[in-house]
Structure formats: structure tokens, C-alpha cells
Image (cartoon, rainbow, N blue to C red; front, top):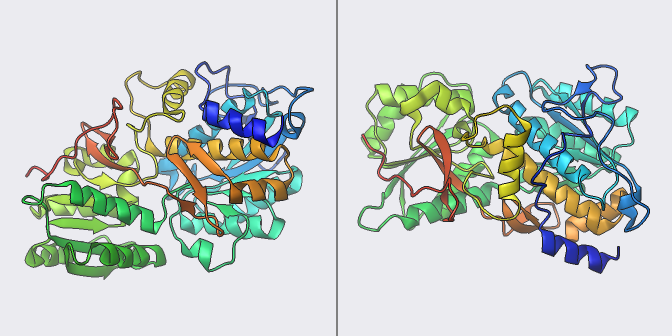
Length: 432
């Protein structure tokens, strides 16, 4: 298949997934790494790989593909670990059903939410396998360890669940590509959602809660930059990342007349903050906790106390086209979940990464790492999150960060507007 033919194929199919899953083939926990249990990944399938090489087509159809990944199945980020894993499994299975690709083997291990374990596990996977690409773990703290290895080894890294642009700009990265909203993208969507509220009802007083870490400070800086002029930043307070007492922040916010509360709390910190907000009878009209409200644990821990809080996790149920329907169908076919269960957002975020990987291998026509790197740098990609490209340091260009809101016990898309079943109008103001 020529590059032009492959491009036409991508445009025609959108690399939408497969409607009928034949099993999560080619996905293994441990792979050739004898340090971990070697077992078939959650959902069934054959650990030997389910794709089939063909004698025709481009170079990639003749070559097997090995993907290395670590995810936090235990430790502080374990609440999202299974969701990351399932998105990757579904994506690897879809790739194995694509006759234009060779067998796809996903070697995935638990990094225990620990940067050192990330380095150790990923290094061991690479030493025991001919790894063609790395798929990321969760959060800057862990992804940073993967970036170092990817740069040292010259292996393309597709990274989601990290939004710190400094990981791209401060290190001179050449192998990092993030199909995930960066700081500027999150904030642009915040402003668009606030601007969509009728002017007579729109909040004007904005408060920023800022955990004392690099990315949270960058988010606060960007919120100030993009919102100032149209909104008044009446409060900006920094607190410890592991804070457990938010009473002073709450009182300061009430005294400042905060109507729109924005923050980047950790999942545990955000849940603690929400419990104390409710106990203090503090009622902002609009609230967005990027990161904290991303996890399904938010609802199980808070229930009604966490309703109507917004989040911006890269993918939200309610997005349509570009393989979204196939993602939903394959998820329910592969896992023992209720037929009406809304997909966790991180399943979609990781699945999006696998679509980018698939298109990069197809367009490159080879597993040669430099060729795949060049394709990632120069191509335009379509995924369940939309259509975008990458700039010269691997940040997404034209990535519209979807925003969700907790409604009816689930995360529902409120921006951008679609005709999807899971789309909802923004609930504003938050009912007291």
C-alpha cells in the first residue's frame, strides 16, 4: 500500500474500531518479563497475539508491533489504573483486527504509581522485547520517568493523562507526542463554557485553588491570562498538594464572593475538599476541578455532594464519530459491565492514544522508529477525541478539550455540543 493509499484509507475509515470483538488478543501482563505474572489481560483473549500477517500491502503489514506500557494498577493513582488498561486493551485488539498491520503485542505492567517502579518496569520490558512504541501511564509524576527512557532509547512515546507543557518545552523532547489537552487547551475550554452562559446570569468572580506544584501553578497562570478582562480573579490561593484541611480556603472564597471555583486538586484532595465545601455550606455557581473529578471514584466517594462539578479529562462520554460508537460497543462486549454503564473517561483517553498509534504505523508503512516519529510529527490524526496534529515538541495542535459535568451519577459531555446520547446541557447555576 502506498503512502497515498494509506492516507486515503485513514480518511475513509477514520480508524474507527471494530464492532464485533474477537477477544482482547495480543494483550499480555508481563510479556517476556519474568519479573511479573504472565497472564492474559482483563477481558479474555490469546496472549500469543490475534492479528495475522499478510503477504500484501505496506511494510507494516509484514512486521509485528510490540507496545510497552505501564499503568498504576496499585498505589495512589490506582483508581484510574484499570480504566487506562482497558482502553489500551481495546485499542490493541482493534489494531490486531486490522489486516494492514502485523501482530500487535501489548506488554503492560503495574507501575504501582511510583516513578522508580515506572523506570524499572519499563526498562525491563524494553530489555526483554524489541519495543516499537511506548504508551503512557498516568500523571506528570509518572509520565516524566517514561519520557526520560523514551528519549534515551529513541522510542516514540504516546502520552495521555499529562498536561504539563514544560515536559515538552523544557527538555527538548523529540520522541514525546501527547494526544491529550495541554494547559492552554483545558483553560480555553473553561472560558468557552463560561462564555456560553447567558451574560445576565454569567459568574464574574473567579477563585483559583492552586496545589503547590509546577503544573497547578501553570494552570492558575493560564486561567488568569485567558480569563482576565472578561472575569475578575478575586482569589488565588496556593496550598499543599496533600492538604487535608480546606477550611481557610473555603472561608477566604466565601469572603471574596467567589462564584466560579477552579482548581487542580488531586483525586484524594478534591474529594476531601468537596466534603468540607458541603459541610461549610459554600455554594459556588460553577465549579471545575480538573484531575480530581476525572475519576469514577469521585461519585462513589461523594454521591450527591459531588454532583455538577466539571472536569476536563481529554475524552468524555457524549462525543460522537471517529470510532466513538465502536469504542462503546467493544467496551460492553469485552467486559462484564452493565449494558447502560457510561464509560469511564480514561478508557476513552487511552483508546484515543491507540488510534493515533495505529494511524502512525499505517502511514509510516514500517515499524522503523524514526519513520514512525516523523509520521507523528508531520501527520494529522483522527480519534475519538477529534482531529488534531502535533507541533515540533509533540504538543497537540487544534485539540479541543471536551468538558464534562457530573450529572445523574455519571460524567456527561457538556462541551462541545453534540447529538450523542450522553451529551447534557450544562447545569448552571449549581443547585443549592
